[in-house]
Amino acid sequence: MDRYAAHRAVARSLGVDAVALVPGPNFSRVLGGAFHTSERPLVVMIPQDGPPAAIVPNLELASFALLGFEGAVFDWRDQSGYADAFAALAAHLPLRSIAVEGQVMRVFVHHALATATPGLRIVDAERAISGLRLHKTAAEVAALREAIRMSEVALHDLLDQVRIGMTEKEVERRLTLALFAAGAEDMSFHPIVAAAENAARPHASARADYAIRAGDALLLDFGARAHGFAADITRTVFMGHATDAAHDVYDTVLRANLAGHAATRPGASAHDIDDVVTGVLEASPYADRIRTKTGHGLGRDVHEAPYIMRGNHQLLEPGMVFTNEPGLYDLASFGVRIEDDVLVTDTGSESLTTFPRDLMVIG
Image (cartoon, rainbow, N blue to C red; front, side):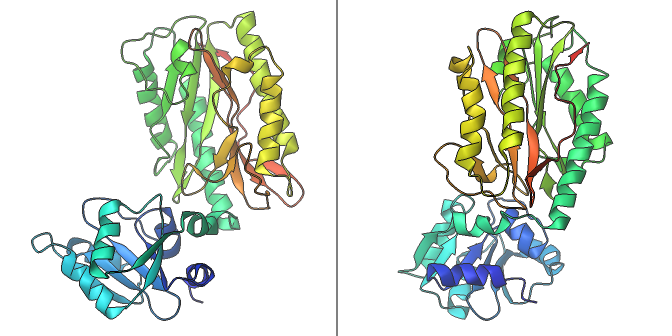
């Protein structure tokens, strides 16, 4: 079986000679290994037909050899630079056009390819290349389940520890430790731990100088990685007590979240889901607190297709996974977000996230 068949098909469909991959989720999916993105370019070129070829930093050759790569490898050293390796690749595999990952390939790698082959046509094929990851296999869904399970174990552990008077940074530290104690191979992203008005910043940074107070909302957005796949979960809890206003805002977000689950099925569009979820928020007294779309795809990347937003009429199909994360945010008081990871099934959907959604008061 040709592990490059899907990428060769992308090249043919786009009318280009080859697809170029650099370290990232698409690279890992095909080759089964992960490499750091750094000042050292590493590129795999997959032509429509025939063996692939690669440019690899010399210090990475031993690691690259573990991938069982089938084609020619052109290595280079820091002392001499990478220009000769790009020229050697161009001579070995004459190309007039290539497709690249527009959101992943860096400008200096693009320039090195263009310099080695004057007149080379370089096409941004991010959607087509990353689209190969849209439908998760059974093994990939199993990896997501494991990442989510670890995340939920960590969350249970954390909530038993959080107390009024802790800083956001202290909670962040405890959450990080809990994730690794639960078996995470890495974190999906740097956790978001935000209390009170900071929770109204969707991508807030934890503060070392704010002690959590009674009545505060505490928003926790985080995830573990397992087998290269990322969980992405958000729960908002309240410290000591929750006001009537907090209950009302939370209930509105929860109703939006549940409406999204109910609407998810094959044949519905990303637009349809966002329209239902956002419609619940818009019909509430808190419409001015809407800041974000409903969600995004999830897999090897924390943010990938499909993007659950109005105007995206991509139809949902079995095997797609995305986040359902409505929220309401008021910088004068607090923010609430409830985020689940959702799998589209043959008959509807399944929430891979099982952590309770009902309002919780802790501490």
